[in-house]
Length: 134
Ligand code: CO
Image (tube, rainbow, N blue to C red; front, side, top):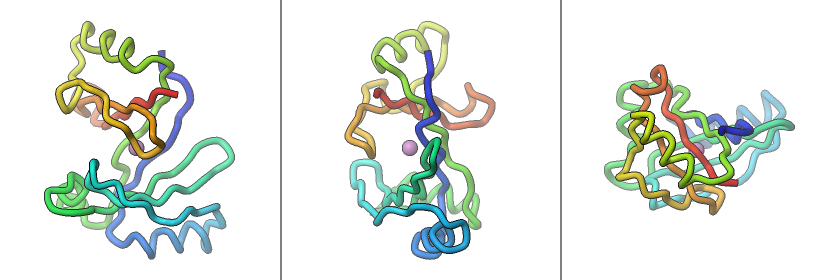
């Protein structure tokens, strides 16, 4: 069911410093920051030859990324995003298998303008999983 690894998301305490580190120290192609108020994050996308890295920084009050950084002040891997062809079919299969889909199970429009869903990390070895319809 799942396809390509679309991105790995890393929550960072200093977005400008992290973006500069990827651009200068690691020599990656780094895009400008974009605000995503619906998700409570500011995102910087880093393009790698085979996938993307998504740097996440809190935006607004009650950002889930702020709660993550409170627990992990140095930052850390926040989620993995896998591609699926049909997000509603994927959701229904996961629900039938007993997995928990966050946010009531209705897809939201994600950072790339495509429908996304998140799966409960406790059902997936402690890893928050994002599914994105391609
Ligand atoms: Co993501």
